Length: 212
Image 1 (spheres, rainbow, N blue to C red):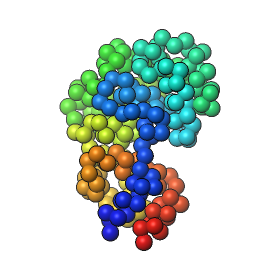
Image 2 (tube, rainbow, N blue to C red):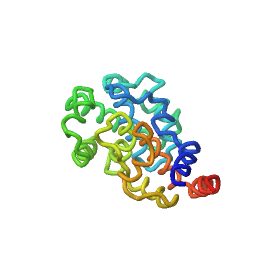
Image 3 (cartoon, helix red, strand yellow):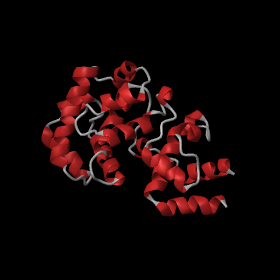
């Protein structure tokens, strides 16, 4: 019965934020940096829809690497954020530049080095991620929830929002038990789906009704 509920959940809500932003997530410098940009946008008090739209505009403008972000003029970053109807675009344009500089200076533009330095320790990764301007603990959890698709050593990872969604669907409430409900390649999609139902109780009801 639980397997059926998870199948319905994945069918209805099983897309990651990286998918929505057009990021072809892989354990490579470009996609990992793009996920960092998306995480920065999601960390502000805006809807996921606006954050994804702004990310798409930044990537369409060519700002897919820290070097490209740093090469962009500040007004050009502002304009891209405006096109995505993102709020606080001036402040965020500055944050993106500062974060790109840190990525270049500390990690030589490659977040695989950040991953390696933590040696699979989730708390260590969270601490390193919160060093980036604009990313707090919630933002770090968003990054980890998404990146577990390509960093399997940290999976299964479930943040508090994913656990809230699991409770609404009467599913297990620990990361390890949730991870056991699907195959490893689907864990990131499952956690993202659980966050979606946590934010939209009507979506949870739809999953439960179709499961019945």
